[in-house]
Image (cartoon, rainbow, N blue to C red; front, top):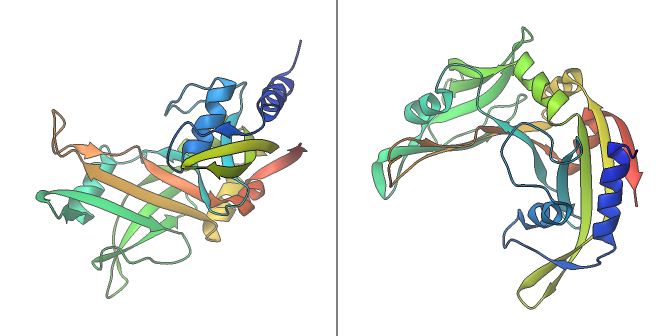
Length: 248
């Protein structure tokens, strides 16, 4: 019986053998969507791995940018993202009665958000990662009521990201269509909370808040988001894992 590792490598080689394939989506997520379509992954937002126990991520070989490790709604308090949006967001220009909050932050420095507040992640080393909101002028902390428990982060690392299959692709354009050739892959395994926190503390993991409001339909006025996103530069991905293997 083939192992999960053998199965996913076999699936990768089958896609590689196709050569250049047309992108199945017109934006930056096209590369991941295309590869996952060919190996039979159903698009989802659940916390489980994608295929054969592996989370799949893809990138263009000529790109060097942040990739999303995972998205997750804060552990505390209830309706945390609505709380952040309503208290620290800014109104939509075309609908001032509703608010949105878009900002990115790190644990080693303060940011500036909308010229009104500063945000910074706080690792209190007592089992919590908090979203710190600061006065933009005085730099004094004014709110740290929203955040994550270590346990919630560790659960994702050991479930969704326990084994990561990271696919690289060359690309070319034929007219207006983008084509990919999935030619290399890397397998990462055994992430740890300790490595995650070390990367976080050193400013190598970025946290994104992207919270909006529904502006129409039955959900009008309610928060529209998929949780905060923890992101890392592609070049630093291997620092999260104990084991690494190249597949070509």
